[in-house]
Image (cartoon, rainbow, N blue to C red; front, side):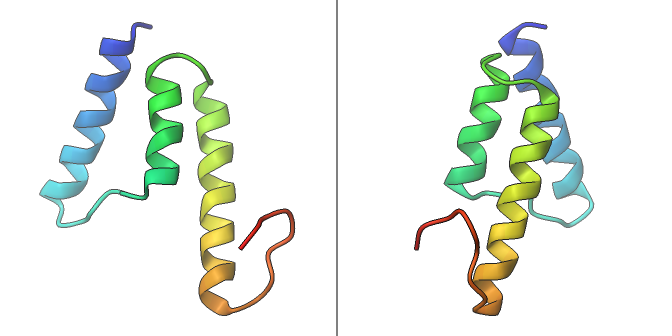
Amino acid sequence: MTPERRKAIFDRVVDRWAQRGFQFESSPIFRASVDDWIEGRISIQELKQRYSEFRRTQSHRGSGLPVAGTEF
């Protein structure tokens, strides 16, 4: 799949979320992973794993609990 095709897919997903009244994740950290997927540097599975880890660290940071393997 070409980077252009991946970018078009990503843009459609973001547009669908917006049409339903939701904002897609806009964190620069997560968007860097999206860019890696668009450019073909990582697989969609790796993007999903990174997003899961990102969400996990974000929810722990909001709770005040320590997050293993991350730096503050």
